[in-house]
Image (cartoon, rainbow, N blue to C red):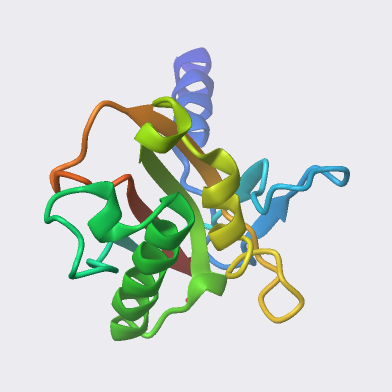
Amino acid sequence: MHRLTILALAALAGCATPLAGGEITRKVNPGGTIPIATTVRVPAGSDIVFVSGMLPAVANPAAPPNTPDAYGDTRTQAASVLERLKAALEAEGLTFADVVSARVFLVGDPRMGGRMDFAGLNASFSRHFGTAEQPNKPARTAIQVVALPAPGALVEIDVIAARPK
């Protein structure tokens, strides 16, 4: 009987939830040039906000609709998407400093032979993450996809933001 009690207590200890509180911690590659974290740890009890994927606004209304020319290159589109994400975060009382994860979907740019413009993405991303004014970097995944919901769009980004209570 005593052995069963010890086993039950051991099993319960393994199911214990972490204590709330603490800081969000980010580990970055010290030699890395991309504004992302290798890992981000969010403490239990934090407020977490998931922001749906955002697409770019039309940058050139004179261009043919539903083309990359209407939305601009990857750098321009990423800048537009990040501005839209900034507004969505602000509506929740958050900023880019609170972003812990980002997923980026890139369509291959026809002007680059169908390859994704990773440098263009990073040029815009670097203006908001890992700067002197906003040093926090999120974990990030960037993948090339065949298409996005808006024909001509090359960039879609969704983010997860967190703030300890």
